[in-house]
Image (tube, rainbow, N blue to C red; front, side, top):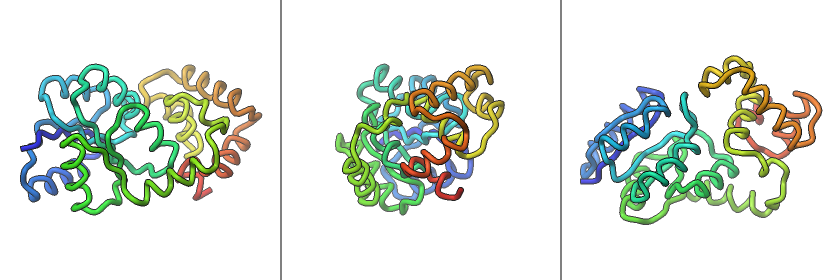
Length: 214
């Protein structure tokens, strides 16, 4: 039995994942986390072999959690399951220490196969994600947005999605002043003058799925 911990802030998603794995057999769900802040504690208490992790949760971002857990529990295998298919998220997740990356659009059988492969010590990336990653690499690795930290990139994503500073602060469990500081750093690193320029940059570089709808 593969000991699995699920970390996602949506109860419906957690229930669906549990149902898929229980039907497949060979998996034991040892813990579920709905908030990024509780993931490290639950991982220590339940000792999973594999963590199925969403990147966007309140309290602590998935990328931060990957780095922290890899430092605390090097043997823990981490498979990202997220709505973000953008290549820059894929690269950041693997650099942080993830062993696999899937989007929530993946079929149940692909998820089961990915968990089994990652738990056995392998890595996994869907063909669609691999193609996006290859496209991003072809466009070059010197783009200004690659200088953004993981937290700055998360704030940038939320700004482009139209979230207010106070809402971003609440989601990330920081002050609005801290979010304003992140925004200022983002604009400095990207050499942009205003909010409209931030959105145009995101659209031009296809950074976020949210920008495609603007």
